[in-house]
Image 1: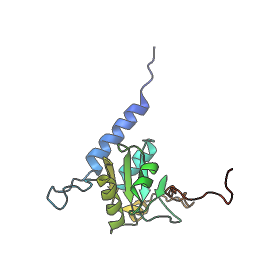
Image 2: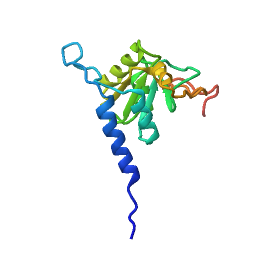
Image 3: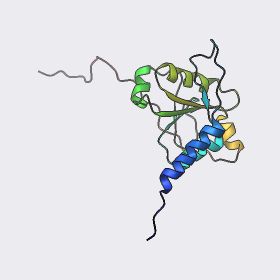
Image 4: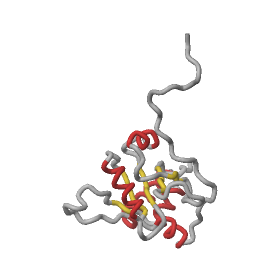
Length: 163
C-alpha cells in the first residue's frame, strides 16, 4: 500500500522556516524603535510565500500605480483607521508593506501605522519594486482596484423624500 505524502503542509512548513531563517531581521530594541515593526522580508522569501498560496495581504504604500507586485493592493499610509479595518478586518492577518525601493519611508510609515493600530503580523519588504525586479521577478501591469473609501455618515441619498 502506497501512502500519499502531505505536500501542502510540508511546503508551507518549509516556506515558513525559510522565511524565518533567511528573511527576518530584528531591529535593535531601544526607546526610538520600541513600538516599531521589527520584521522584514526579502524578495525570495516573499515570492516563496506567494507560490505557497499562504494567506496574506500585500499593501503597496505608493498608492495607485501602473505596475505593482502580484496580488498587491494600493494603500496610503494616511488612510483612516476605519478604512484600514474594512480592508484588513482581522488584526492577526499577515500583512506585507512595500514601496519603490531603497528609501522605503512610505513602506515603513505604513507598517508602523498598522502595527500601532493593533495589527500584530506586519512585515516590511524594504527592497520594494526595485528589489523585486532586481532579482528578475515580474511586476503586474494591470492597475489594481483603488483602496476602499470610508462610508459617508449622514447626509441625503436622493433628491426626493419619503412620505
